[in-house]
Length: 274
Image 1 (cartoon, rainbow, N blue to C red):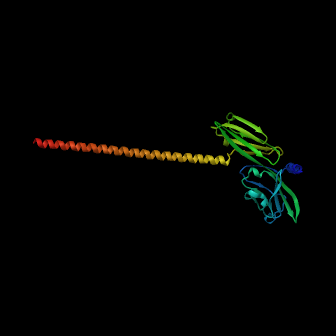
Image 2: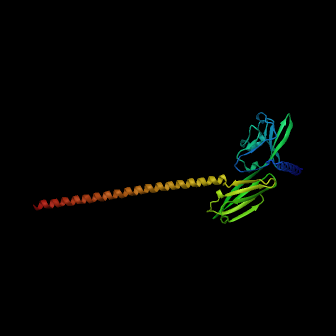
Image 3: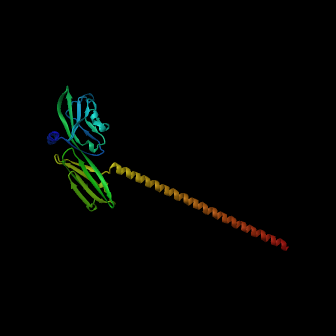
């Protein structure tokens, strides 16, 4: 029974999305992990604090309220800190994650009766990762969707095609492999096209935050090691120079004392002869 309800709900939402897509609305939203997204509320009356507006997110498993009676709903759970609603009742999601994938619905209830239609969005999230293996690096661009994949994913490279070692595509993902020594980030884009409204979304490759974090640590450690090495060599050079100077001074003093002693002996011998 639960599986049947899931299929009915999913089919109903897909039909709504197809209808809105055919009418020219941007119902399919594609956004990259870490970015912000705003879902507009077009069919509501903007009352104070959007008290009569309710935002939902639906998945294949359940439907959860995100905003109701002018505030973020407790059902939003861990993502509540990343949610907010504008004065025009649009839903803002900060720092999008894969967990935000789903069907978003905005409805308005006045005197417990639904007013007007509903705004419906299908949010998909793009993730890019990199994997280093000896002398090559493989980049993966993938799309997480609320239901079956409706997107075509491919890498677009603006540099020399001979730089690319290998490419591959599968359902909602694409891979490209480069020699590690190549500089590819600024010339590489992940293109995501949904199959219904044929709209293409381009995303410049950016390493995951964890990768950037580790690179920053490596750079800082390397810089610190370089500074320590320079300071150590400088101190050693100065110490070595001081020791050499002291040794030369001592040798010079010894030579002066020897000369004085020789002169004294010579003077003594002359006096005796007279």
